[in-house]
Length: 218
Length: 243
Image (cartoon, rainbow over all chains, first blue to last red):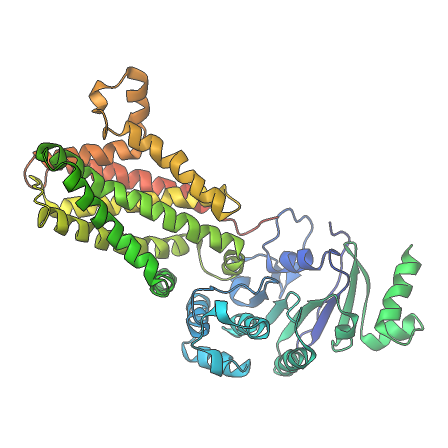
């Protein structure tokens, strides 16, 4: 599925994994967090081999499915995840505040709106304050206001020193990242800052740059 | 250890948000036992034999259903994948389920035993506590089998179909209908390797022999060994790395 990948992520920055659905973004993220089977070759994450047990408390992985226990409240979900990652109990209130879910803290996850769900997912990943956040399509299906809000949170986290790898199939989101990895059919087409990618392809926006790169490849 | 207790608490909280399931889990066995009492209204000796056996059949069925669906949900809703990227160990996860479900089984068995020995007039030569302990061991067996079933099912429809497939053969062969000694050689040999045979053997010891007896304790041990075997085998199906 994926082959010949070499790339590095810089600390304290937001890297965007951008490309069409089915292009291998989720697989690549699963390789990085160490849950993908059938990996050959070596991927080093935070100085260790991907999937090493010691990495499990240093990486936060937000799956695409926005996984939470439907029959628990927001707070109960977070209390559980806090306990298993060894985060102090008071961090639950902190992350609820951080993603602005205080009003819904007592609500069952199944009754949350789409936007609240994705914020619950994000809050769960923030517990334990991991150094690297790997977020699979965290803004999918959200309205522009919410997307703006989430990107604001991502930026705050990066400013605080956290490294983020965020996937999206929306080119417009690539522009919000510090570094962009354009992925298609299991290959990284290009890697650079948004400005580098547009100037290298002599285009005006990332959508054009992506199309140009696909043409060049063929 | 902390994560085991955290998981047990989480599973208990999930149940608490589902009071209907708790009422059914605790109420249905009591109701069935009452029905059985009146089915055998003119044959109290038959009730004395079938009643205690039913006490250890309930936890098998209910815990199989609860745990197979709960674990299938973990696998299909993405929560398991999420957990597998955290430091939580698979045994801590299963230990948490085991803890909460066993407590529920003890509550269920305690209620049914109290009702049977009290209002329904059942008498038991052996130790009442041992009946409850045997029921708890069977509940763990139900958890192990449910966990295994969840590995081979994709949907909740499929997983509940594993109940008749894995549990009914055991009930047919465990000595509930025909004493195992009177079965043909082949069926007897098969029943020897099925855990419920030992659960029912244990019940028969408790019906006829007074106090805490060694034979019944041995049967509890065998059921526990099968339960742990099923849980460990099931743990192998909870993979960190998947396709």
